[in-house]
Length: 257
Ligand SMILES: [Zn+2]
Ligand SMILES: [Zn+2]
Ligand SMILES: [Zn+2]
Image (cartoon, rainbow, N blue to C red; front, side, top):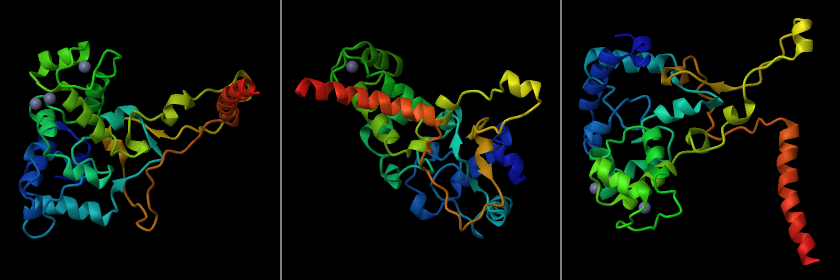
């Protein structure tokens, strides 16, 4: 199987290959629940990359290494961020690797069947209601829904663990962040530009599409990637933010005087 078709995440074959990768893991990785080993290029668990690996699979990892395959991009769309696997998320703080075996995490995987970042976010939003109390016997709408839908007896604990998992994601990988796509909008040309047939530089930097679009080959190993989100707001927008912020403090100053 070719690396390119493998990374296009097409159903059947990719799934078979992923399952085989997940089975052929070194001893150090045996404690990782096989159900959460989704893909070696998206997560931080290790598979055999030596002679212990099935030769055809070793060819895949060798090819990836040879061509410098890695995840690269200035910013990714929220759709992509939500589709990433949450367990062993490759770009998360390594702390996430030790968060798999708590009672809540086991419940998140077995009862809630949570696999992606998006599913994790959706669970946390259920306990954001004002009526929610920080207790497993909370009877708010969200907690009751969690109990009914997933037969979970500790909705607060599970939703809280979901939040902790998300908190290990750097801003660039956290769908709860304000992303460049939120303020950069669509690519527009003015009437003037249209008339003169001018195409202004497209400043939008979000990689959209599917997870297969986040990989780049021939990357430079000496250039480190960053997980910080760039601030690409137009100067006018930044000014608005500053004005909004100083407005508030001016009022307070006024009261003090
Ligand atoms: Zn449970
Ligand atoms: Zn509640
Ligand atoms: Zn639960």
